[in-house]
Length: 311
Ligand code: PMV
Image 1: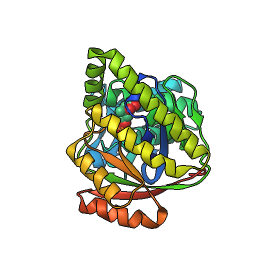
Image 2 (image 1 turned 180 degrees about the vertical axis):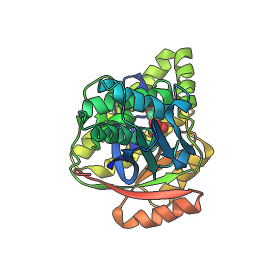
Image 3 (image 1 turned 135 degrees about the vertical axis):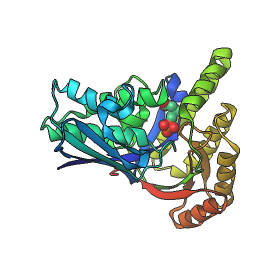
Image 4 (image 1 turned 90 degrees about the vertical axis):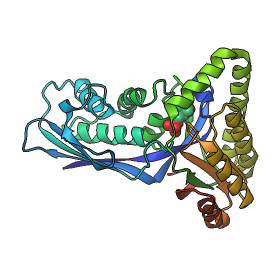
């Protein structure tokens, strides 16, 4: 049996503006992960069992554009294998679906790595990332590529669309509480709506995206120089801009306010918005207290994570 695993991720700063060429910062979240097991199948064909999304079938019975089928076919095409061996694939994940924690990208990356090692043809990180990006297009429409990149390299990433990946140093560890609204984040829809706003008034929105870009630069500097407390007000400023982009929601705003009320240094939504997760910067000693305040304010789940150099 061959196995592979990939972590979740959160976007710290810069979501949405990243689609328009501005930088964004994202980090892996190892507390949640996707896991793939591949073994020989007694029956011909490639069988997928993914209980969380209620899939149990041979891949040719999935629509041709289904992300799982596409990933599997693209891996074998990339490897030049025209008749793959009969396989049984089991996919499980502790990453909530459509919550902004990168579940689609993590499943793709783990699947690509498990399949390529099953046939003893490991792929480079660059190839894994490119294949996972193809699947992201099916999930999101016009993805920036940030999710697949962070999940593939499993390191803090300073991401600019179309540019080689840059990792960044974390001079001093910092603690985040991630809280889930429990509402699926309609990323494709929120990205589409921001595009409509941008098309209607490009000057205004380009200036707004520049402002987000400035926040991202300042945040990177704060992280690299260990001035982590500065991240709090930067998170608040980024959240305010995301509200203007219409991608927050009453539930996200309620959690952001609850986190600040519980002593967080700053808080913002993370990812596509209108649901999914938010994050709060906290002193490590106050993390539990902030997490329980978030659950009291309606969060369906909370994760406390420390961002440091070696994730
Ligand atoms: O909802 P998520 O975490 O998959 O993130 C979407 C991030 C956006 O910037 C809104 C879109 C993108 O493709 O970068």
